[in-house]
Length: 454
Ligand SMILES: Cc1ncc(COP(=O)(O)O)c(C=O)c1O
Image (tube, rainbow, N blue to C red; front, side):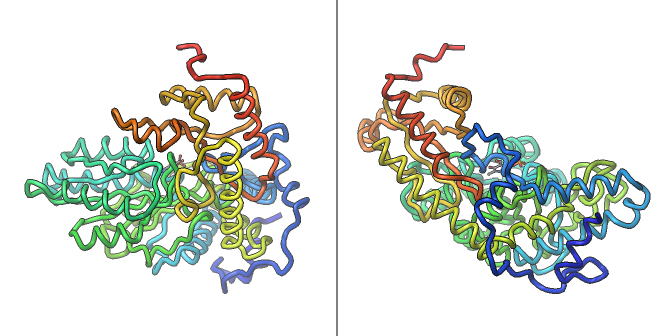
């Protein structure tokens, strides 16, 4: 079967361009159909960590296999006639989804890590070629994703950029706390006659997970004369509303394999047309070098491009849900808040942020008696839950600030938080499994000090 068939069934034209926005199906998918689409998930495991690696339904995997076979069947034909129209069609769908103004603003890349490297590499050239002065600042959140932080150091700090971190309070109770810290960091960035050249802002931080007021922070950057804003929105599409024109950043990336049902791995990188578009290049240089980022990204040598070609199939899957992606996102949010509250009540703890500051993931305090006292403890506890209790959930370690007894009391001794996700395949039993596992550990007087030291 030809995977291009999706195009025709959904009102596309001969060039592979969609004729109109697709609508969600009048009757929504049943629980049994959802279970069938995710039957490849290990039934013995409670997967409440969609945030890390996402998920891919059987129908999208089937489409991916068709694309792979199309290539293997007749590579020449695929390379000359199928690949580029297919990628163009995926980009066209993404453009519509994120409300980009122009198709040239949308590139497909492997993942958010690659997108960050593209943006940071461009900034490093600006330092090297004299457009930015050595010592000028780059501002990023303290809770920026590890790979993105390293990318900033590898490309920008090495080229002479001065890196400033925005400390973020956690647990957090309002956007104002974040905005306050961000403004202070910009002030620090501008001290001693420096300019802030680049701000790197997460749309949804990974750990701890919080939705950041990204539109507001971008506006502040503009007011304060920051040259470029890059939004790392790895978790955004499918879990928060994405309108790139409304947000107004120069660069914005989101994975499609986290919350948009694509297989690993595919992300989009939006680059605002008037920004440094022509100076952006894919770090893997191919024969397409110099033909614009979308084209450079569309051929980085011989490889499997199928994950980028199944965006239409992912949308097809999404259209089976009432309300399409908005409906999925809203229901996931409601459910994750409900489950977070249920866990917090059972463990006599609290949520790490108010519900309106979370998306399809929420942080829940673990009982303080578990004694999470380091990142290593958090990792070991995560392994214990996975191996002994068959629950996949990441754990965040949040130390108290030095000597702050008050904070310890306020937070009931909590130093560990689980980050729970909700996606369409989850059921209430997944969260009960986690609740009961933690209650069992508490009942057995488990403490992280009991972990072997190595
Ligand atoms: C905020 C954030 N940025 C970047 C990434 C990197 O995504 P990927 O591994 O798909 O490149 C992640 C992954 O979880 C993330 O949470």
